[in-house]
Image (cartoon, rainbow, N blue to C red; front, side, top):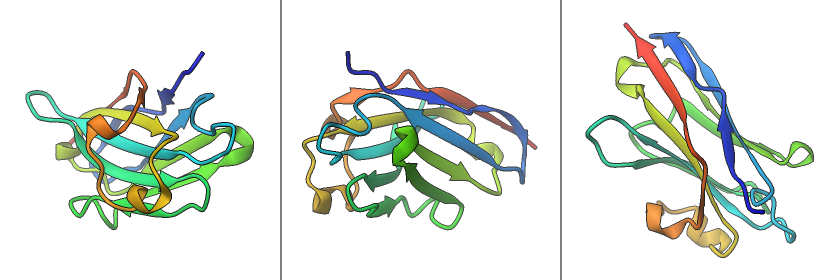
Length: 131
């Protein structure tokens, strides 16, 4: 059964850091070529991309709005992709989702992808940043 599962969210004060985890069977597909993306959605707003990683070679993409504060990485031994967010701001408060797709080619994964480009989604993990 295909599953993608996020964890690591919580409540933090502005300026703090969090590391979110995305794990699951599809994250590292049998040929280990997945585009894994992190998205976030604040109340009343559309879901937006934060970062992506191509698990085969580690190539990444970051949203301009968060570049410099986020790092996406992977641990293949743990079948996990991480999103570290530093210097958190109240406007970072949102539900953070992990998505994976084994059919997106590597070059495509280094460019911003839409939510419809990803086949598998987790339920999300909530991040609340207080001022």
